[in-house]
Amino acid sequence: MKKMLIIAAALATAVSACKDAEPEWIQLFNGKDLNDWTVKIAKHEVGENYANTFRVEDGLMKVRYDGYTDFDFQYGHIHYNTPYSAYLLRVEYRFTGEQAPGGEGWAWRNSGAMLHGQDPQTMLKDQDFPISIEGQLLGGDGTNERTTSNLCTPGTNVLMEKDGELFTPHCINSASKTYHGDQWVTAEFLVLADSVVHHIIEGDTVLTYYKPQIGGGNVSNYDPEVKQDGKVLKSGYISLQSESHPIDFRKVELLDLEPYLHEPSKLQQVLEAARK
Image (tube, rainbow, N blue to C red; front, side):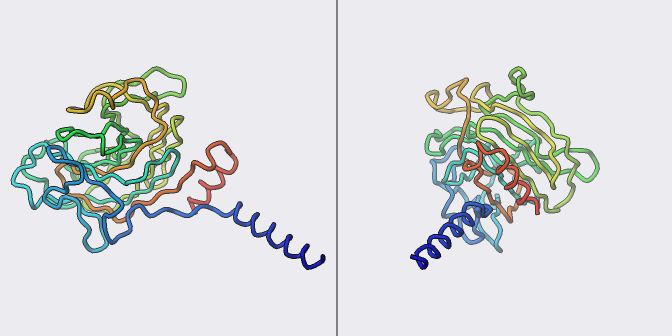
């Protein structure tokens, strides 16, 4: 009997330890291949990595255009194959090299992390962007101010205040500093289902908004059955952009926060641990 009690106590301790253990970062990009990702580039079928746009070299996920003679509005996205609802996404990126010929002026040193995006399998061949919330990533020109981690809304809208009115302009700048040159930058996105999204750069929260939902324009050639205006976005796919300027990603990782979404004190503990 005594031995059974000792075993029961040990099991209880083990269960408690597992319950209190902090979650581990999920490495969306493994540094080796793109097997867990699906490419969708405008003017091409889903799964076609045209001109080897997205590739892995030297342990980095690279976006390159050496196989393009003209960019020709071939906006691309590489989508992680698992959708998420509540999470902290961390991306380390740097811009490099020269823009592809034919790239738009606004797309110079421009990329993005798409949040709560539609399933790439539902994107039509000529669709330019996934219906999603974009954490826009921008690089500076060495002189002028140009914030990063801005918000853009292809086929979506948000609230800029918790109980405010619908915000319908396509983009809004964050409060970040400008990052010039080819330096590495750490961008984080704290997404809590359909309630709130925070953009964080180098540890500082630079933009917050609420209630992401489908609506508005700034997305073309989509399936009307997918674009259900007014539908609140509680979950979706994460993707990274190819918009005509080369960019490297050396880390793409995620903390799944859905188990703690309705436990505010535990959620806070997890987020505090992530900062250490």
